[in-house]
Amino acid sequence: MQVGERSLLLAMFALSGFITYSFGAYLMVYCGAYRLYSLVHGFEWLRLCAGIFWLVLGFQIVNALWLLSEVLERLRSGEFKAET
Image (cartoon, rainbow, N blue to C red; front, side, top):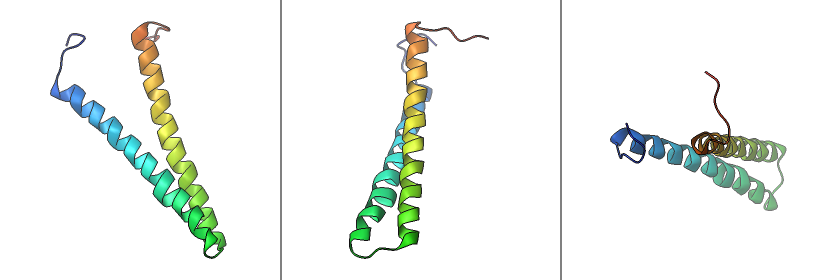
């Protein structure tokens, strides 16, 4: 496969990254931040712990995906070489 060649496989890889990013953002915003926001109406320790857990888990997913994309970009640009 040549650089710049379009294929279904590359499109699926891009889509899988977008799905993973969307899931991490969903965990951060809806499951994490919204639960923390709902503490305004009534404080519960379980809701606080669950909100923090989902916020951290969503951030870890989004951050890991960002790091993966940075490594691939630096490999492509030749900034560092992968040892085989």
